[in-house]
Length: 167
Image 1 (cartoon, rainbow, N blue to C red):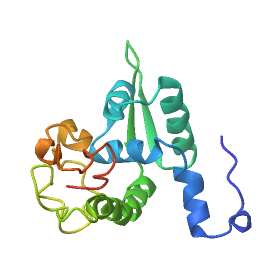
Image 2: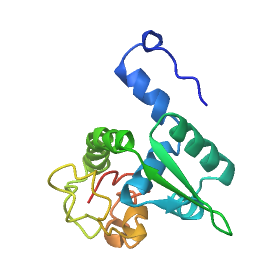
Image 3: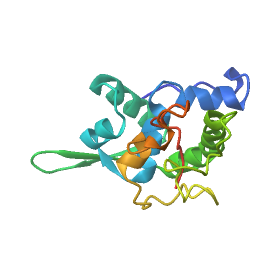
Image 4: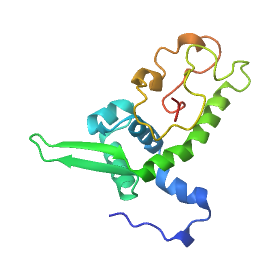
């Protein structure tokens, strides 16, 4: 089990939060698990570019921090599923404003608002909605596939994670 630093060891709340979500892939793992419960291979496909070793390590750390729940089913072959705990859901709710800031930032100075164009998600406006995992959003919407409305317009294609918390 991971040793959690004592409260006095952190400089501020952001420092404590970054200790939990620090790493290139952790917020993307959280986002994928916010959509639905996933097996390891599904997570690997949902977070393109992550290696098995890093994904396994990050999942273990998130489990030790009480963010991710790992359910092992006694079947042949063995099946393991990962889901968010209530603490993980609350962390996703806290990350949603950061995701909104990121969406606003990538469109800054382009003259196009985040809610315009084919790449925009019509359900992105409104409440947090992170506790509901049945949004039905496709993997293509999360990875930016089919977002050709911005091609050639001098705006970078949306990438995995910029729609964090989007519905």
